[in-house]
Amino acid sequence: MRSIAVVGVGYVGLVTGACFADLGNKVVALDIIEERVENLKKGILPIYEPGLSEIVARNVDAGRLSFTTSYEEALAEAEFVFICVGTPQGVDGEADLQYVRSAAESIAQTMDHSLIVINKSTVPVGTGDWVSDIVRETQSHPIPFSVVSCPEFLREGSALVDFMNPDRTVLGSLDQDAASEVAHLHLPLRAPIVITDLRTAEMIKYASNAFLATKISFINEIANICEALGADVKEVAVGMGLDKRIGRFFLDAGVGYGGSCFPKDVSALKHMATVQGKHPQLLQAVVDINGFQRKIVVNKLRELLGDDLSGKTIGLLGLAFKPNTDDMREAPAIDIAEILFEAGAKCKGYDPVSMKHAAQMMPNVVLCNSPYEVAEGCDALVVITEWNEFKNLDMERIYTAMKRPIIIDGRNIYEPEMMTEHGFTYRGIGRGYNGASGVELPSNGRTGVTQTS
Ligand code: UGA
Image (cartoon, rainbow, N blue to C red; front, side, top):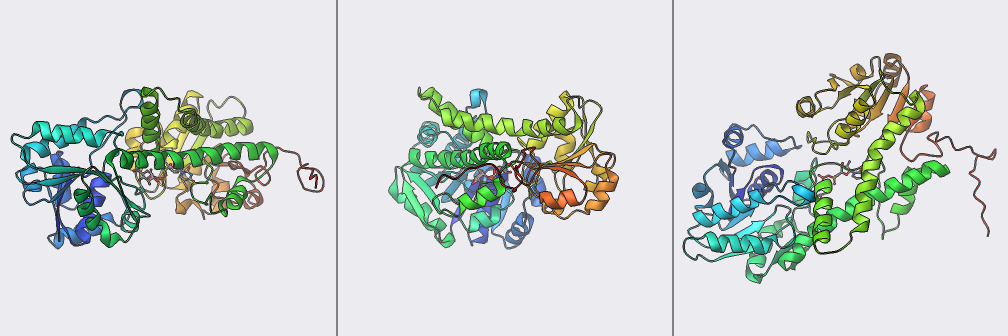
């Protein structure tokens, strides 16, 4: 059993603290927001994540996990302190490091024995060195410490599974002994451990997220070409993904990526590159394509309902940025609703878990209690988040409830033929061949591709 302090009980901090406690360690998790800590003590979590409340309760009951607002209490016995505070997007896409700074200062002011400071927040390359300087300069007298970068790779919605079954653990430090101490902490996870220097570890995090975002924008660009040429992007993704060098993951075309990570991290990496005089053209294209995917949905509505959308009622199915989370940060639903409002349309919406956030973040959207209530009187329905409960809806009921039977499937969760059989006018994303893109097929049912050999 090792003693761990976690600073910041947001998404990453709470999952990290609860999981390390579950692995048998003693964890004290700190947050400066008193209400959040008081709620956690009562078992009320600040976020929705499958399985998290159970694992938190289990470890609190076992005495391995506790919550505090006091740095003295958190650091009293700690050998390791994880910094898991937010790094929101600041001006020009630059990451805002004010919370990292204040965590580092508070740690330095409070520590009375040697510590390994582990940075889990996603921070610009070079931040580990900066944190080192802050701790050294803030300490009232020198106490040994080391800084290790340990980027987080978990996904919202599957955070516990991802934490307990990582593909790899990446550790960066100038102090190899400290890195191997942190490596020991991760040994029960039985994943390959990459030990490198601080800056390289920080870069691995950005490069990983930027690559995944690039994969998504790539398949979205291919989807748009598929539509024009009469090919089906879902099958293209399967065919491509079977090549081990490419892989099937993150090749789902749709309304583009959202969330608290990809948009912010791609912008931050672009900013770092630009500051160094580099021209991150690929990253810029990734961002541009992602923005365009939101507009595509509205273009499809215009194609079917006419250019003037004023007075039309559009139903939005799924408001969270992805399934199994209530997180609405950078959610495609927000952008799409905004474009629709500007065009004079009215929006209704439903999400299985993010209704509370939606009420605050989308005040103009009429929130409903079910997909069927959304469908009532709608001119069109748009699937924005691929929640499981949307996959097997009673389509007859939806059809009867709608004013016009139009479905824009922004996540390709339905089969075009089936939707057509139900009587809907259906449009997916990049489903040219099956999804009625308007491409005229020759009478043999094949597109006019000529094979030369
Ligand atoms: C992402 C990374 O996947 C994690 O590895 C990383 O730790 C995390 O960011 C972070 O930096 O904290 P997350 O944002 O939770 O995780 O969600 P993802 O599952 O990666 O999805 C991100 C967005 O991409 C969602 O809007 C999703 O709908 C979209 N997406 C994903 C697609 O449009 N197509 C795909 O094929 C996959």
